[in-house]
Image 1 (cartoon, rainbow, N blue to C red):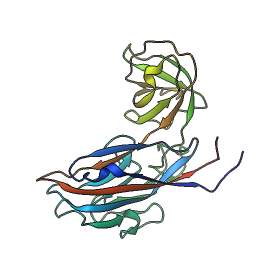
Image 2: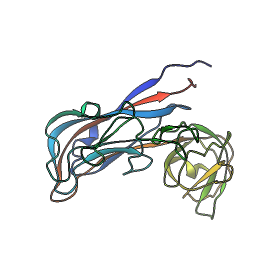
Image 3: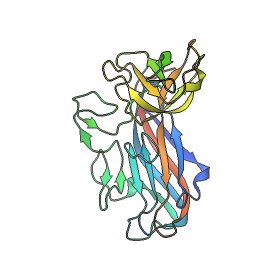
Length: 251
């Protein structure tokens, strides 16, 4: 087994040019077995952002519209949004190192996993002080799929010691490569969890065929390029997200 310093990956999307008026959502799957920190959020504004109640923003979290892992609000709710040009969260008047935040108005910038916490955090060792928004390591092998709480739900079992301990209900996950019970493959949302031994999670997919093998489950990091609200929101540009992934190299 070899160890590296980190993987630093920059994610970008070309179809965000009008996100100021229309919400656009993307998802990221990190390297197997590595934890992640959102290090920067960059926006190239091509048309000035505007809204009268809440301006557009970029949210990075466990589901669409959530900002557990990072946030960049592109203006206040009492003035116009950011003008044409490049903007990046790490160059705002941030404080802390790390985590870096800026609260000249609520939630303006949150990077590096957000405020520190000592218990009940996703992605960390319980009882250890770490950022509460650290992206948990994932890439768990699937060992079985059975019917869940009823016939419209499937229960997915994972390999490892308490593999589902960092998942929460409502979180987005990617299931890939399952044979037999193929309806669970794809982008899913956790509907229930094993709260005793943390061995399984459930998704709202009908269980109809026996599991015959294979499969892995990954946490889906959701990137929401959120439209403004109030008046006639408008503007947009192109969004990039930089994430640093830490952990052992894995094939």
